[in-house]
Image (cartoon, rainbow, N blue to C red; front, side):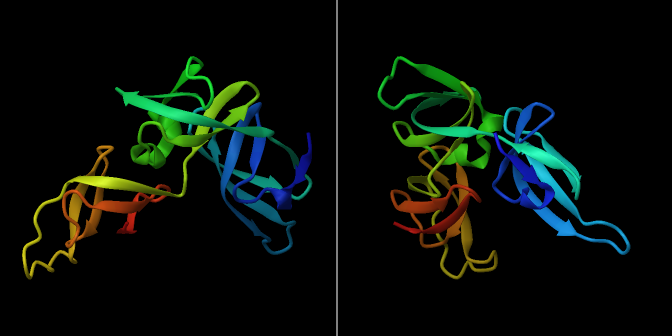
Length: 188
C-alpha cells in the first residue's frame, strides 16, 4: 500500500480516508500569503456515493486505495436495483443500488459488459464505456421552422432515459450518447 503526498492527490485517484475508499473528483493546490501550500479536494465516497470536501496540508499523507477491476455483465434493472453477474458465470449475481451507478446507469442495456470496481471482495461501483449507442423509442415530430427552442427536442431511448437531441432525430434512429454527461453526441 503506497502513501500519497498532499500534491499527489489529484483527479481520478482513489484514496482511503477514515477507513473508506474515495475517488478524487476535483482538486486545487494553492498557497495563501505567508502560509504553506494546501490541496483543496472534492471527494466521492465509493461505497455510499456521498460527496465531501477535504483540504490536505503539506505535511499530510494519505493511503492510496487498491481498487481492482473485473468485467461484469449487466442483466436487468428493477425498482432502483441494478443486477449484474460475472462475465463467465451467470450464477454469481449481485445487485447495486442506483445511487452507486450515477448517470451512466441510465445508458446501459442488458448483456453489455461493464468494468466493476472492487474494494477487497466488495463491488463498489461500475465504469461504463464512455459512449453508448442506443435506439430512439420516442421522438416527437419536428415542426418546420420550430427553432425558437434552440432546435432541440426531448427524445426517449430504449433504456427509458430521456435526452435532448436535434430536431432531425426521429423514432427508430440509433444515436450515440456520452454516458458520463448524458448528452447527445451524434447519430450512429
